[in-house]
Amino acid sequence: SLMGHQARIMTDSAHTKARITRVADERLRAAIGEGRVVIVAGFQGIDAAGNITTLGRGGSDTSAVAIAAAVKADVCEIYTDVDGVYTADPNVCPSARKVAQISYEEMLELASLGAKVLQIRSVELAMKYAVKIHVRSSFSDAEGTMVTGEDESLESVVVAGVTCDKKTAKVTIRNVKDEPGVVAGVFEPLAEQNVSVDMIIQNVAIDGRTDLTFTVSQDDLSRAQEVTQALADSDSIGGGEVLIDDDVVKVSIVGLGMRSHAGVASKMFRLLAKEGVNIQAITTSEIKTSCLISAKYAELAVRVLHDGFGLGQEI
Image (cartoon, rainbow, N blue to C red):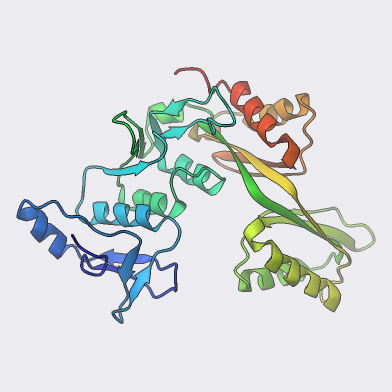
């Protein structure tokens, strides 16, 4: 058995959220060469000054992937309280189906959008070093979900999953000046306070004034509110009232096939509209579309999108 520093998991010095820089695997390989089963404590490492560090949220998954990459393992098995990755949260959507295989990109998007199966950092590391991850249950021997690189079969699936992030809040600054540098003047102070911004909407200007709306995690809301209120009060952006709405959720669809299939976003909007769900904001990437909606429609939206894209059907 080895602690993180004994296994030489080298990290930077960021307090409580250190990032792994490398794994000096000589001791690991020597023990494996002797036929030993090596148990390494996760969530921890050591920095260049010899200080013990902790990796923060998802640190144990990240440790496992880093060690698997260092010893060039065939696969990294992550044991958790669910038996794989599902097309939606089974507690919300009874027809949710376990996925046999999913790409790194899809898993990254799902993890960032609220799915809690794997932490983002472990998937990023696995993608960088091409480590296959097998997500399995601690309570059964059933096959789980393989997280791996893209292949043609994955591309054929238009939407792989639906997820809902309930820890979202919307911030609106009314009547800001519509001139160069104002938007930067809002988001630079937010970045300095480590507030991560997601969706951004700027309305059409009227008489040189506009409204600026963006979303943040509820964990960052108090800091975002302090920064924006200070900006509005200082008149540096010419802003007026700051409006906060934490009664919203972000519902998203994710799938590699969205790159090559037209009309996926419009189908999503149509499915939500049919149920009377109003969309407050939209953001997209190559493989995901997210909509900001009222929190009261969260579970309805997940079920409607899941069934609308046929995710409950066996492939």
